Image 1: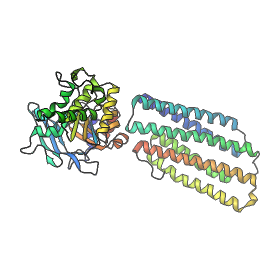
Image 2 (image 1 turned 90 degrees about the horizontal axis):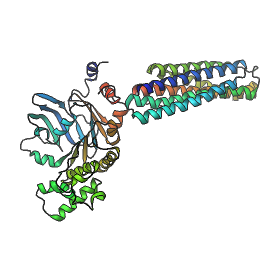
Image 3 (image 1 turned 90 degrees about the vertical axis):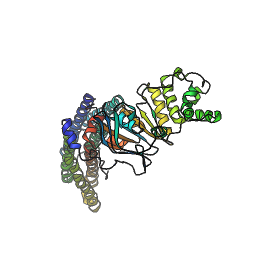
Image 4 (image 1 turned 30 degrees about the horizontal axis):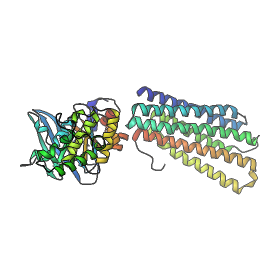
Length: 207
Length: 277
């Protein structure tokens, strides 16, 4: 059982690392105009396979050992957390696809995306650290940053509606990327909730 | 953390036993108050106060030697049948102390029946006579009443269909699982209010275990059941409430799903996750 739990931890951490790299690379590609969608697609697919591995291993551990208490909470949460990391990979690919869909975006203002992406990447890092260290305080703080990202997304929509001079191409592409970042930050917060559940057994009542 | 340190950490909640621990709102069927059990001078149960709900299944889990079977035997005054054994404290059935002055222990055992680890049908008796034995001992001679009681009890124990055409055959000819259900039917025949089960499935295969567990869940509508089990998964499957015992003390007592999902005590967590035992 202990060996199985260790294997599960390592698998989830491997997913964490690859998903973090995927998101960072996709944001960099968007900002610099490099088309890296093929590479990011490969990582996203890899994350999908790893998520299946986490599910298989979790079910095997449940069937073999009928775990309870913190062991059960950890396995249940690993399923949720691995789904979060898988979603990071999918959104990273979606961000990379924006460039492919809209073509050259070098004339667009990227400042809103850059600010929001910085916070989103910080949230990803916090969710990974919180999981790796079972850090409840860190996990709780992820939710606070989520409010900032939500606000940035809403601000952008409102600004775009009021100011047609931004141009449809820039406005739509930034809206899509900000939407994906907003979803990533939501999943980071969910991972924080799962860490809280592993450690304390308490569910976030706001979820 | 060492066990001794954990015991210190966990002290303060259930260890002190100020009042009976009761993780439910209804009136308890059974309630122990500062119950102590001794073998000679050895204190096997060290002042346990807990309330058992009516018509629910309550499981007691804990490592070997923690006192769970001894505790169970105190609940129907069977502990005192052991030489040099005695109890202190109270066990209240519907509010009345079964250890009170003038209380007849045999009458208590009629109200609070027991099923043991190893199926123990009377070997020379037929299936019918095994079930009817308790009633006959209580003076029931009316054949119709006996027939009705035997059929009712065998049906409750989910054994009627398998035995209705062979009631005159010896009980010892049944399989292990059937014998255990026969013992349960025998206990039910005298219409007890509480059924105590001491590891009732530990000698049975998974199929027989599953049938007993199904039966327990059915019986729950009419009887209060207390089961001692080594098998935590069994407690998780059948019990509404679960108590964890360790070294003669009750460490934690909670709704079963809460205890197995998020135990409050470090000792409980360590035991149920297999870190010690």
